[in-house]
Every structure is written in C-alpha cells, then in structure tokens.
Amino acid sequence: MSVISHAPVTASAPPATPPATPRRSHIVRYYESDASLVSEVSQLVAAGLGAGQPAIVIATPAHRDALERRLNAQRVGVSEARRSKRYVPLDAAETLARITSDGWPDPVKFGEIVGGTVGRAAAVSPAGHVVAFGEMVALLWAEGRRDAAIRLEELWNELAKSHSFALLCAYPISAFGAHADAAQFASVSDLHGEVLPTEAFTDLGETVDRLRAVASLQQKAAALESELARRLTLEQELKAKVEQLADVDRRKDEFLAMLGHELRNPLAPVSAALEVMRLRADDPQRVGNAREVVERQIAHMTRLVDDLLDVSRITRGQIELRKEPIALAGLVERAVEVARPIIDERGHRLTLDLPGVPVTFEGDRSRLEQVLSNLLSNAAKYTDVGGRIWVQGFVDGDHLVLSVRDNGEGLAPDLRVRVFDLFVQGPDTRSMARGGLGLGLTLVRQLVQLHGGTVEALSDGPGTGSEFVVRLPYVPAIAATRGRAPRLDASGHGRRILVVDDNVDAAEALAELLREYGHSVRTAHGAGAGIAEALRSRPEIVLLDISMPDADGYEVASRLRAELTGTMLVALTGYGEKRHRERSRAAGFDHHLTKPVDTGALEKLLSRPN
Image 1: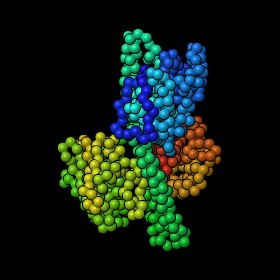
Image 2: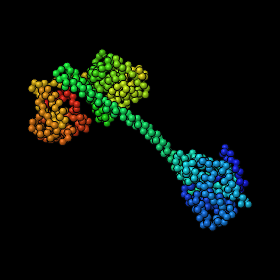
Image 3: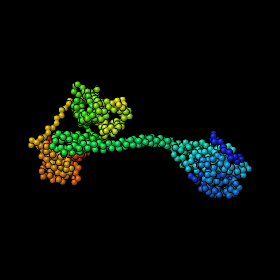
Image 4: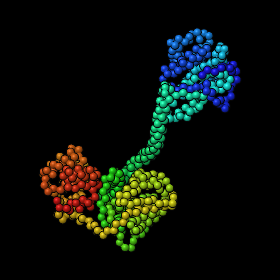
C-alpha cells in the first residue's frame, strides 16, 4: 500500500477539472464499528512503521487514542516514531478547519498543509515510503456537507499527481442508509482506486462464503428496490388522496356555508308572512297570500332536508326502489308540477316533446319524479330570466330516454365532468344567488344508477346551454291509476285521536288541523302525560313523537301496546331512516311518518280501519 513520496507541493492551486483518475493507492473503507476501523488502521500503521515507512494519521481524538493503545499493545514504538517524525498524528477537525474557507476545501491551503505534511514525512525516510489514514471527509459527510467531502477526495487525487502515498479513507456505512444516498455513494466510490466493503464481508475467509454473502446481499438489494418502488407508488397514491380530500374538505366547507344560507333564507319570508297574517287577520286576501308564501317556503325547506337525507341513505345503501307501472306522460306532468314555481318565477318558456302514444314502464315513481324535477329545477336556476327549457321523452330500443335541455349558461369542460359530484356547483353560484346545496345532480346520478341507468351532461361550453340525458332500461308495463284518499270532513265520521308531542306548538297545530278534518282530538305534551291521557281516554289512534325528554316514544309505544287493544299507534317523528322504522315496528308502532307530515298521506292513513 505504500509508495515513494515526491517533494512537497507548491502553494499554487491544483487544477480543478477534469478530476484526476483515482490511483489504486487511494483506498476507501466502509465500516460498521469503530473497533473494526481502528483494528484495520493499526495494521496499516504497524506494517508501515515496522518497515521504516512514515505514517500520517488524520483522525478524531477518540480514534487516535484507540489506535495508539492498540499499537502499544502490539509493542510498536509509537513514542519513538513520533520523536523521529515517522509517526505524525493530526486532529481531523483542526486540520479540516485550517484547509477550508467558508466551509469549502481550499486547494491552496490543502496543498500547503496536507501536501506539506506528506512531503515532510516522506523526507525522513531514505526510501520515501508514506502511508496515511484520513477521516476529514467522514466529518464533512456527517455534518451534511457532502459536496465538500467529495471535493476533498478530489483534492487528494490531485495531490497524488505530485506525491506518492498510500491513503486509506473511511466512512461509516450508516451514513449511506437512505435510498437517496445511492448516487453519492457511487460518486465517493468512483473517486477511489480500491473500494473495501464493511467487515461483515471482509471477515469472511473463504471465497465460497464471500460469494454466498454477495448473492444474499443481491437478493436483499432486489427486495429493497421492489419495496422502495411499492412505497413510491403508495406515496404518490397517498399524495393524490390527500389532494382529493383537501378538495372535498374545501367543497364541504363551502357546502356548510351554503346550507346555512339556504336554511335561513326561507325563514325571512315565513316570518314576514306570519306578521302579515297577524296584522291583517281580517283581510282574507292578504291572509291567503301570506299562507301561500309560508306553504312554498316550507315545501322548499322540506326538499332541502329530504335531499340531505337521501344522499346519506343512498351512500349507505339504505334506499330500496318500489317499482310499479309508470305512465311517461304522468311522470313528466308531476315533475313539471314540482318544478313549476321556479320556472314561472324566472319566466321561462317550457316545451314538452313526448310520444303521441302512451308509454308505460317499470320504475320507482317518486324517485324518477325526483330525478326529472331536479333536472328541471337545475335548468331553471342556470338559465337567464325569460330563457327556454325543453323536455323530451322517447323510447330508443331497450332504453327509455329523458332529456332536459336549456339555453342557459352552459358548462365548462372541467365542470361537465364533475357536475354530478357531491357539493359541486357552478363557480358563480353565490354571486348569482342561484340557491341550492349542490346535491340535486348527485341525487339524480345515484337514483338513475339504482334503476340500472345512466345520466350524461352535454354542453358546448359556457354560454351555449346544456343538456342532461337520462337513459333507463325500458321495461314495458300497464299503467296503474292512483287515487287520492278522500278528505274527511266535519260530518261526524271522524276518529278519536291523541297527539303526543313535547313540542306544544307542533302538537296543538296538528290537533287543530285534524279537528278541521272532522276528528275528535286531544293533546298531551310529554311521555308521561301521553301515557296517562291514552289510558284515560282510550283513543282509536295515537300520533306519537319519538324524541321526548322524559322518555322516548319507543318506550311509550311499548307501554301503550301492552295496555291498549285495537289502538293504532303512529310514529310521527323527524327520524326516518330504515333503522328507526325497524325499531318503531319492534316497539309496537303500526305506522311510521316523518315530519313535516304529508297531509295527504296522513289523511289516507287515518281513513284505514284499525
């Protein structure tokens, strides 16, 4: 490992480019333990001193002390070698500080200090042989100054052009533990004429054992590469998911703000209408107009809440379709009736294009009415006042096609792709006061998909209008007529009813309505009062709220079912999910209605025999 040293270098800077080709006398050792490193350096120094060759050691104090203890144990005359200038120990940190400027290796200082030390050490030996160990590069690497460490290795190679020496550099293998270190590890190795692996490999004596170890390391490397590739893929997927969740979270915040806006909006006209009714109670025309305002706003709020609940139920798979024969013309007529207020309010012209012959098919009547009315309301909201809307329905082979087209704002390409996603609305929804929660089109897609169909948004871009096309499987059927249950009047044929609700206003208002329909009605405001009144008056029908403070309606129903025979128990509540309906049946309820109650459904129910 030792070579003849030449004269000391001058103070002029060695050429920076191109880097010198590393000589075989420039060796790098990767090590796992300090003990292994000290053992190898002691062998190098002992062999050199034993042969009369000067040795230079540029190391940390800990490594120098451990090295000298080992040399003394080997009976190597370290003190004598130091006095005769054949053993030159230098502190790595101090030497590094002397050869750098602003943290970067200075070629002039390196030549003066390191080159001068190598030259002087070689001069004390007639043969001029020099061995050296240095770990300044390892200090730079540990501090994260990796480019500086590589530059220092290059300076050692440039020094080898004018000086002959055997240099052993050392790096802990743990300094290259990350996948990103691979390129710099290769750069360090390429700057040395000989690369020595860690002691885990060099300590294996037989060639066959070393080959076996190499094969094992190759397998581990391949496995690591595969794992890194998998983790990179997962990282990219995670990043995409985080971005997606951030977008959903942003739209959720916008939705909540819009929800507050949409739920508060109807309260203003309701409050104003009620005040008009109070002030003008003697003016039937004014009272009638105010009442219509209240009815419209309550219907609007009911639709908002129903949309919220429907999205939740569909997402959890809790909606079951109730298929029946449907007449296409009747379906369109009912959907138009639902959307008519907003269409008339904005002065749109509506054109219907339906087949000349009756078309009937199988489907869930209420859900398909919801689909078509949502599309009509959407078209009305995003079409300027006085615009046009076209509704078309026809049979195309095995499909029933429903189309709603308008000459409104149209859709940008990116919005056309996302328009059915949850909470998505046009970018100017608030500024244009369009209203709504961004749920209508989401419900359209989900309900159409439940029917086994598809829905597509078409538009040539902003300002060109849009068209929504629904395609449903066409299953011909014979249309069934639906009749409305006759309204009960004050003819003396009413029922004896008990309304139990802790909300006094809700109980009394419903009782007053039922009295107008000709029923005999009592009220109780709480679970305990409801049980007592029911056991006392023995009503034919009990309309019972579920959520009450002193006991819930399930407990009340169980008690009444055990005490009363022949009484119809009806849950009248804001809880309408499948699990609530199942629990009400288990508690003894005969029927389950959700608030606000559909008066038509309630009339029909009250007309049934117990």
